[in-house]
Length: 258
Image (cartoon, rainbow, N blue to C red):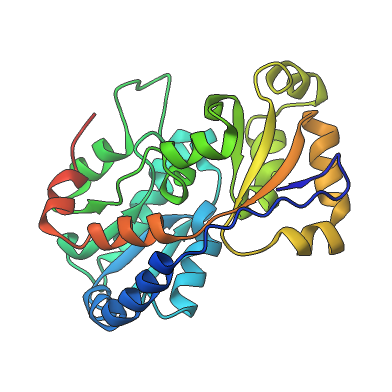
């Protein structure tokens, strides 16, 4: 991990093995089949996962008929989240039937005090039949599951403020604009509740930030009072969840209201 306060501190997590090499070969064999499966799909995602999904397109894993994004951070504005999600669904329907639409949003990304029972699945179920949601609690949960986050955090995953690369670019908009927090609000909500910020880095952005944009990390540290670390991860879980969304089982789970 890289620490903004231990300037800089590297602790790369490496788990190279023969099993990994075999896994890479197997991935190569099925890539063409997976591509053909995504070719007739439209994907709608929260902008928080824009970098990862764009990477998967550039790497040849995804070739959807259409890839659409809502603005990042709309979990802070649930009414706007629903509005933008429905707009993207209308755009996706220009090219895809409902059962060909995959939504990359966490189960708990829509939480409203005005409508406490409404979730992303509720919105999708009301919008159409057969729309598939990638299974995950939050966007970061799609990148690193609970077990991996527990391992990364030393068993303290609930005390970590989990970031993705898009969070690094959007945190001011979310906290300072959407939530309208000032430094006093930040001081009341971060220190004491969280140990640190960990950026789930599947794209190798750590060196870029530490060498070219250190002021961005220090700004985040100064405002939240939390140490910022980068943890390299693979996108295996995300690829698996996306592939799972192609199956009938995934489709059956997608529109459950909860």
